[in-house]
Image 1 (cartoon, helix red, strand yellow):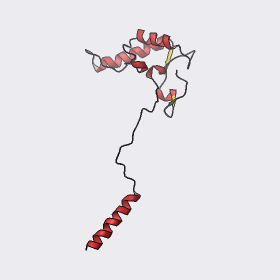
Image 2 (cartoon, rainbow, N blue to C red; image 1 turned 45 degrees about the vertical axis):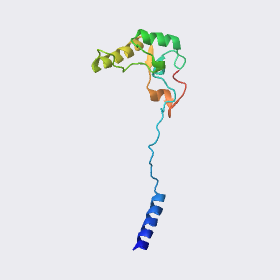
Image 3 (cartoon, rainbow, N blue to C red; image 1 turned 90 degrees about the horizontal axis):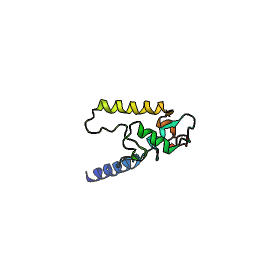
Image 4 (tube, one colour; image 1 turned 180 degrees about the vertical axis):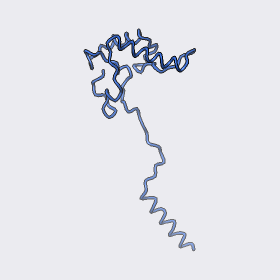
Length: 121
């Protein structure tokens, strides 16, 4: 009986050695490697070479309160704001930037496999 249990145990160890078991969950870093939300706003005439200082001034003028080093506060819910007001604020900022001559690109348009491609500065 002990010998049979021994062989079953050995057989189980051999089987589990062939099957990869993930104990630690896969690490998922920021796939956009330094891409900032403000980079999506590009002037039509100078895509990839948009004046950074002018863009920051324009986006603050359009209603962004905190640039957060380029990540913006478009979806931030400030005190006394409802979630509907946050959505409306975000749309108003986007419309204001469009009126100033900016095109708004998606993250996928500005990156390739998670790495900035230089199209959106």
